Length: 419
Image 1 (cartoon, rainbow, N blue to C red):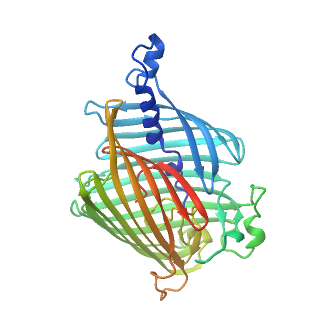
Image 2: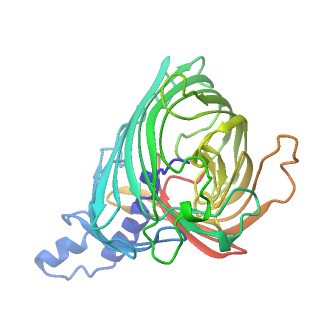
Image 3: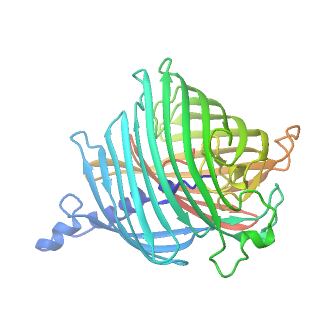
């Protein structure tokens, strides 16, 4: 149940496109400095309003000055985007972000910031060998995150909304991944992750604290873990970030053992399939399905169990259900599936880069369950909605997804496709 704060930072590209579109609408008769500021090709930066609303994090408003670096091939190579924000729950804050794409084979990101109260974040990642043209693909990732908005509703596929509690999620991890590219399509990878998770009392006054309603829940104290994971992948995608054709099939197994280091023990196995088909040059069908089982979970904290909810498909971790907040349903095992139609509706140039706008109606299905023999295809939760995406090939997607379900609407923003 990792936080994935880079993904939640904001839909920078989508907001930047909006800002640039407004700038390009400026009059060519504007005098001097005003004309330079209104022209994206000469402005020192693009001031972009930030509006971030989620069913878990509440409302955050702010301003993002965005700098883009574009290469001679009109591809974005770097985004620098600090911001000043005000959180509904935690007051004023600031963040710094750098997203870098030095080549088609490597990427790195750094995100860090904090608010007046409770919340802090730092996330850094470097990955090399993305194209799998060489023998080895590897990555390093570290993060520290303190969030005051997570919710817990109890275990099970029918955990009621009325049981909602709050807690502070304080966690840090260091992970290293190495992948052996048997061919460009087949890869075997190993990931080692070491870290801690500390659960604190609620800070949102309107909700009870998790330990008052679920005092026997495993994982309410500080826990350390050393997790190892093995993944076998078959991949024919035509793009790493913006796939239009191909499939990606993944099988994985992992475990955390307190006998090596740490205080928790559990194991998990899973599989995920992602399929993309171009129905028209402007229309792509995207579908995914994921299944996760935990053969042993007697000493697993609640945050290590399988979960559905939110807007992200994270391999071997959580799965999306875009009418509910992150980790809305938690239990031993999980199944999730989704489909969306990514429809290109507009194209134009911003900062000498070709950008396109997509509309993507979507449907998500999912459930959690505690018996391995249970049919994963019955008693499914459902969500439907519309995604709005700004795409700068070949690296960047910014999105705003609006989902609808039995608990009302939910709005998510971020970068990269949900799956």
